[in-house]
Picture 1 (cartoon, rainbow, N blue to C red):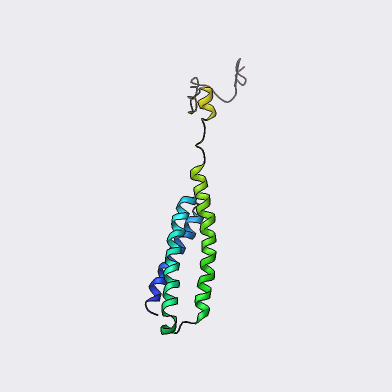
Picture 2 (tube, rainbow, N blue to C red):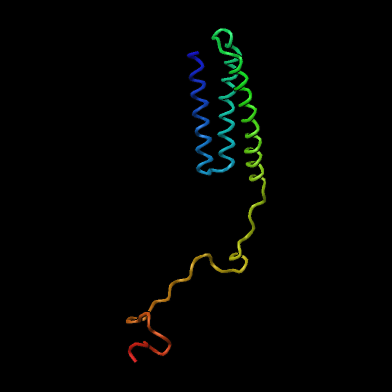
Length: 130
């Protein structure tokens, strides 16, 4: 059983990384790599359980639970990696409106105010000084 714990800890670590990736919204491509890594760790755990269950006294329910969880992980993998592939295959974005119109994407330079100008200035001068 002592050989199983490092496998379990590695799977938990990879699962946490996957969860954090989703919380940080790092994108489908990153999530696809992380779920593939998690699934590899999960497979190692399942193989260990199948090989050593009789010798270590591991109940068969543990193996069944791991396999059921693995099927769920594979379903998530299909969705995540499918979304990543779809995003990768999308056509690149076309030109922006400013590219088409020929204007710059930068904001115009601010117009300098005359010295002594205030909020109350109108076209014909300051309304308060009249």
